[in-house]
Length: 430
Image (cartoon, rainbow, N blue to C red):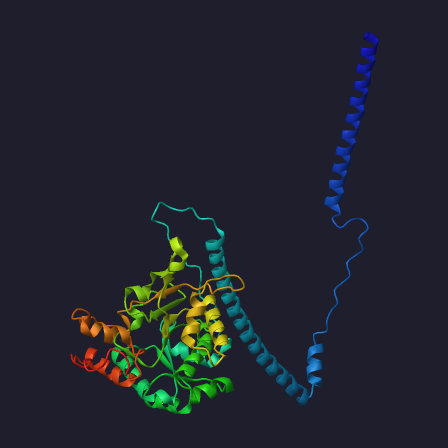
């Protein structure tokens, strides 16, 4: 055992000595390499640098002297052309930068919507939970209609305005319409003229007007169509306003303005509309019980009902659901048998069900006493001493065919203080 141990010790010492010699050699090699690197940084085998090419300083002068006046003029033309191209490129870069900014803005909206829809939210205490609005405005696209974009930029305030469509068939009512708008002091309004006569009429009365570019499908209806036909056009025409990023308070011309409607809007929904209802139940909704005696114990079926929104006066924001709504309504109104108000409400209210996807648009019903239809006025308000003291924002003469006479009486009653101006009219139509 002792001999074996001595042998192992001797072996380990030998290996240690060999390792020390190897380490010493490596260290010596490194030192020598450092010395060579210091004294010869380019290496021992690097060839001598080639002297740079010496350019003749007179070559340019000689070349210039040989150029003819024609060549000089040609160079000047080339330089001028290059400057023009450079200017055009700068404009393109500016345009692209603006598009990039809008794209980033859209990305921001998309991210916000993703946060709202994708992030899990913890519900708060009972009674404190409120739903989130998730329909941001669309990114404006002025390329859709640059001429209209310029007009809207001059007329609109805070990207919103009143818009009315008119042709020569409603010239009297149109004059009364914009006269009251001016009297109230509403600056942001625009008439979409459907014929040359109305365009000239508006210009002569200092009324902001827009005449669309020729469109055979629109012009044929606009120039000779009646109220319902013209009413159907607005859904096609409004689309451009929304694409340009503007909120529109769409108005028929059989409306009397008594206050500025923009002071009374909530702006929390895609569509905010006046109602055809005449009391709280019909305007804001109610539980209507359907009775079927043959069902015995289950004879009573509860239904939810609301009277329709008026398609002649509504505020619509520039959102994707709003534009989808306009597209759907306009497409269905290509059938001449369709009525715009019925189609407008069906698309807005019908829920998704098998084989049908509804429009996911948020909606709000306007206060029926502020945004008043003529049934409310002539059937209820004028007969109630307290309600008569209330001043509406607008009155829409939608329930009565003698529109112009009633419009003038409404102005006399509310604007001029003539207390008996409404008395001689019947509640309903003749």
